[in-house]
Amino acid sequence: MRLRRRVFPLVLLLVLASSIAPFAQNKDEKKRDDAQKKEIQSVVKIVDDVAAGQPAPNDLALTWVRDDQLKAQGNKEYVPFTVSVDASKVSTPNVAFYWRVIAKGGATPSPATAGDKKDDQKKDDKKKSDFAYEDISFVPVQPGQTSTKIARSFTVPAGSYEVFLVAKEPTPDKAPKNAPPPKASVLKRSIDVPDFWNGELNTSSVIIATRIDPLPAPLTPQQQADRPYALGAMEIVPALDTKFTKKSELSSFMLIYNPKVDSANKPDVTVEYNFYQKVGGQPEKFFNKTNPQSLNAQTLPPQFDLNAGHQLQSGQAVPLASFPEGDYRLEIKVTDKIANKTLTRELNFSVGPA
Image 1: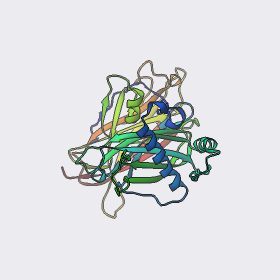
Image 2: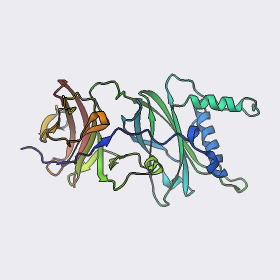
Image 3: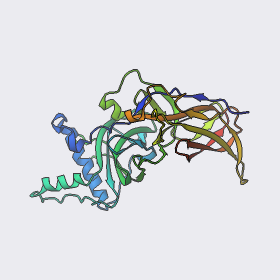
């Protein structure tokens, strides 16, 4: 007997626009107040120092949680990511959060030396040109929480990158004498971003979702920056781990890129979801599967058109009540029938007591 599932409605998703413009290149700093300008200078210097080899502080337990890769416009890729900070260690109502993306193998900027003012502007422009992306936001922190999650994004061409992140308490205008310096954390993360524009059959990351919500209206650019998992007319709330209870559903979502099309510009793709159970040190065994999902001229909306930027999506929600407690592997098999090509994606997860 096959597993029952709930298939997410097909919506006409367009290729994602680039995330909000990096502040260092396009934002009007005249609109920022002096305190925020000073914070920007402060966090940029912290990253410059760490990039030059100085020790990285971690007063706020800044931790990488997850990242995903999707196709963006203009031959670029869209990378939403989530980090956490220990809110119990934050003594201010918000933190400055800054992220910088540098291509591996590119020039690494060096911090400016005190008293060297002659070519400051040229140095600053050169450093910014070395960055694939950078941005900053000021994130509220709720008192009493032990962990605050921060989700943001960046858009870059395919390649290998180093991501520098800073979370820092704001510097007070008038700090008490002998007051300790504001707490800060710096995190460095390596990311490989795949090429979704090379014409080969591929998929986005498989995103495991806590839920997927419809959006009544498009988000503003600032809302999109704060909610990077909003994709067109829907918003994904990603699961932050893959440990579930028997009362849960395993909800997955992904986008399928570069399928071949027929004369009517429609693809013919089948997606299979197979579950395997891991038992102790024994070889895993097949557990169950759901009905294959067909994505073709008969199942897609009549107006679906890859040339118009529409994206092919697959996803389902599988109740876990029938899964015995233990560890599992989900194998997702994508077959492009027109191109006669197949690829697989895998996800490990566990099921615990209700």
